[in-house]
Image (cartoon, rainbow, N blue to C red; front, side):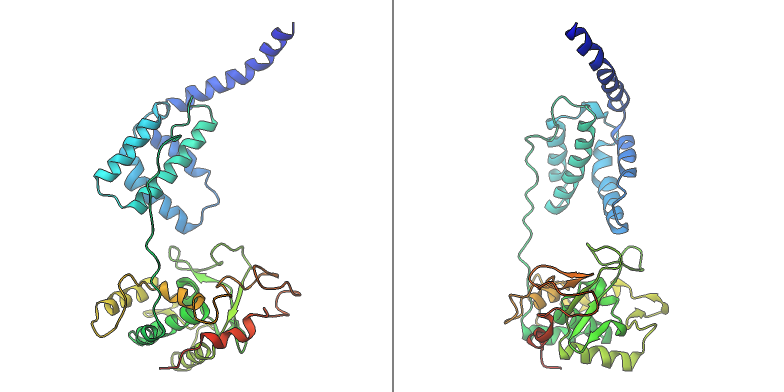
Length: 326
């Protein structure tokens, strides 16, 4: 009797799995991906663009017409070898493999495979190059090699440790003390709008040290070019729009090609942000060691309500980042 009861109890579950396998197993990879992508609700605009790029360039052309129930580790391995033969970079290979792995894991949870098709497959070994950080002398040459907006962005990144998009959203109203700047938003590269900080919820912020030279650059730029609702950087052709990412990128290309500016090979704009976190005398104060929202994280001791206190280490560390004003 027990065996008959257990068999009847398991029958609906087994039948449901059989129906799932019949429905999704015969489905083409491209159709399955469309349904899977609709469930990725946590992705921001830039992540959605990145995902669609990987799918349209690498995954769908090679796997789009394949039935889902035909995937195994050999299919995945052949996919990676095809990317290698096509000369796809290791970083793109690694990203494509990660997305394929996530899609097949979702299908595996439905019971489409007897064995996980990515089990045992060696992922592409992407080894990013070591970050190149400019020296103080090199930074002096770099920051004055472009126009006024480039100088402002260079000082904000190298002095306050801002990301590119955060520097593009610099606002006079966010100077909360003589030596503290509050980062509250960024210019999103994809939407070209002011949005929440990366890896942060709406309303959260970061307080960072504001060296005297950076504060002077902000005040000088505001006096010379004016502001719009406190924002210093706006679109060169239309002040109603946000500052475009390509404006700095185009200048950087011209600067790196110029023979009179001594820039080490491999240096990128983001390297100026690493300068802030690796400045001599400040190695114990990471860029993200700041007040966030209503509490301080990492090394900063927890203090009172947001906006009423400043990070203890933010006060006094700004001077350590100062470079002579050129």
